[in-house]
Length: 357
Image (cartoon, rainbow, N blue to C red; front, side, top):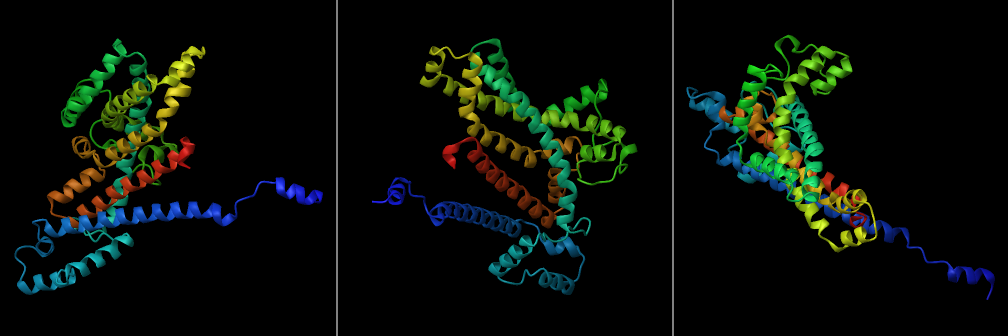
């Protein structure tokens, strides 16, 4: 046997490229299929809701005094004379092209309205989740490490109040105390009346746009308006995140590998953050993603109380005005947010947990 043959026998066999690519392609196809089915189900549900609501979209357009011929013309123009399956296919085609119809309130495309109001909610929810994560995660870890101490008791009380206290009441009390009495923060709205449309809208996020424009006066005023509602939303996310972090950490700190690490003389800092906390990161990703999604779609009361022009107040106003195109368009966007955040969570799983790769 030659030396070349001997080396070939010792060299480990490499898997063909097709064997490596197939699992990735299969996972990608399954993920794409799951997303497609979920999105299709969301669109079907919103379509059915729009049809079963006790609101006549034709009367909302033409008014109650319109003639029967005008009513019939608009009825056919909206495609309501066609079978439900055909209507759903038309609806599906329009949504895939980001066409949610025209708002009955302002006669503008709903997609343009959503693109205009969504950055306000995104900015508010992002600051809220940052507040909740930065304070909630360390608080939950400390509460678990110092179980039964005063820190643990404070964390549990904060979580209990956050779960039980109505958000509209806290918002009103916050405005009364910090805006009405103390004057520490700005009032309702995104900016004061003197700063409306002062900086050009580049991203729709007024804090970012003010920084890009170099206008510190607008930035300061916008920050004074957003700090109270963002802190309020952040407190509710803090209550949930700290409670779940505490629960996850208690489970890890009672495991045998933690006892082994301490017996070996490892420092408490390394035991807590490099071992116990490292093993709860994947679980926290889900908690934080769900909290963020809830802030993006569940800040309706906060936006109404603080006159915040976001997607929550937009959907509420549209619902009260029987503007179903706007309601359904906003609902689809909110559902899409949940889907995208779930995909993002799955990607982070693979980053923090090699077993998920």
